[in-house]
Length: 245
Ligand code: CAA
Ligand code: NAI
Image 1 (cartoon, rainbow, N blue to C red):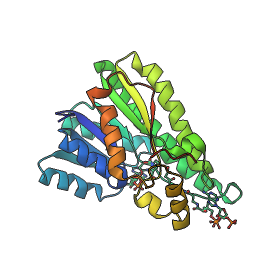
Image 2 (cartoon, rainbow, N blue to C red):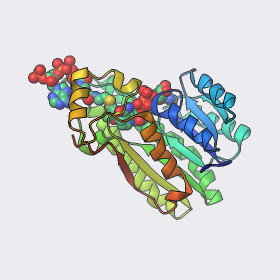
Image 3 (cartoon, helix red, strand yellow):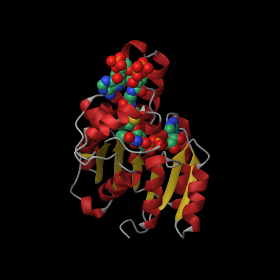
Image 4 (cartoon, rainbow, N blue to C red):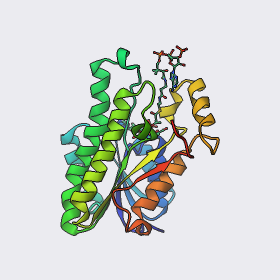
């Protein structure tokens, strides 16, 4: 029970990596708030409760600052002061540079970059006051190396690394650790949209010879959230089977 009694927010917890993380954190004793705009987050919370864990679903669009403020109010009222923020929600809108319209550029900025900023900005003051907290942001292998068809997405995932390192400096001295996880290609609804040919190419370029599973990333979040990582701050943990794009 590495997170016994701790209050954790998991954004994007209705599906993919976030769902796996919410379930794993609850099994490790955390009281989990699932922030997602997809109503199926309530089924994830119900399944956790059925297994003896504690979780609530708070319908939230992380790209909207007012949603996020209300979500924090509800979370702290129901569960208590937030100690862990897993900034996991993210989207893709892939296309070559020359075919990418401004709408798809902006949408990805709004969720992957502004969404992470919105959540950290409301949660950080309480953590700083209590001199204790952990924020973990979702980057990507694509934010480190770039990827064909992902101008918008790779820009946000590189930006997440910049924000992580900045916040680790700003908040570290207030007892709050901030780190990022940079996954490789992981089998979730997000990668279901990627052409098979490209996924095969990614597997071929991965020394471990497979795609990641949501659990691989949830375990990395767990490590960084736990006391085992008490001296880890400003790190970007690559969890990608050794993939270099
Ligand atoms: N590497 C090398 N070549 C690539 C490539 C890649 N990753 N992706 C596409 N190409 C090549 C294609 O093979 C094709 O080559 P030819 O013209 O010689 O046949 C050329 O680029 C054009 O490709 P398409 O015909 O597919 O062009 P399109 O305009 O219909 O689509 C695209 C372009 C949207 C980029 C599409 O190829 C695509 O969806 N690619 C996958 C992008 C991707 O990897 N997304 C990851 C999403 S999951 C995620 O983002 C999670 C994470 O963090 C890793
Ligand atoms: P997914 O698409 O399976 O799940 C994303 C979840 O986020 C969904 O439940 C969705 O409803 C929610 N979400 C999307 N926009 C939201 C918003 N504005 N507000 C609230 N919730 C929102 O994606 P997956 O694969 O689980 O990805 C999770 C994170 O990991 C993302 O940030 C993604 O960019 C990142 N990542 C994923 C990789 C992969 O290969 N699957 C690789 C590297 C990073």
